[in-house]
Image 1: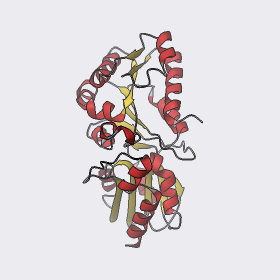
Image 2: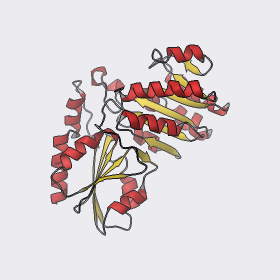
Image 3: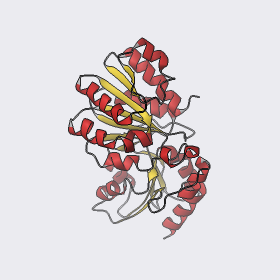
Length: 296
């Protein structure tokens, strides 16, 4: 099976071959994999080199010229380095694009902190009118990309090296387990770990591969008159906490947010598993957090 990134590149090539109104903009990353497409469509597969601000500005210019740009590089460079261009060239100009990142929070730990971006979704979330997709499986990544290309919306598609064992292609928050003690909302590639951690607990498990727009109705349908909710996101802890609170504004509730740490910078290299453990996002740490919370 192709990885999430490989699936994205194969799908992007299919799209640019089939749709003359779609362009792909790169900053060296993945240019080799799309070299054949660039030879076929030199005016619509553009590599700007290692110039990430120009990457986003070029995508915005293509959008203003009537094309639908797919803009791609590593998350740290796409969102953090080029945030001003995302804010101004896309948002302020009301231009649409599909931003596709790879690297997630720490998919490349051997590359060090420069290639880590746990705050990317929180940054995008500070801007209005963005859709945010966090697929947990290659099949979800393909479907979300295909769904994102039509129209002129602003979309952030966050790809990861971590994958769940099975795809879940439904719309909104999907209920995978039903329980009576509370709700655990798992976002993207943390689902398998959450299901393993929640195994002995009498809790409902919801799954989201699209986290913006936030499925308020789906969450409210899963809770009772009093709600205990655990939010597990594979990026900055608490990124979606305000949406949970807004959704349950008239429901007495407790909320536990799990994600990458806010108050400590993890400076180790190591492996993804090492970083999962450091952030409390491995299955064992999630299980301990759930047991403590639902016992309280």
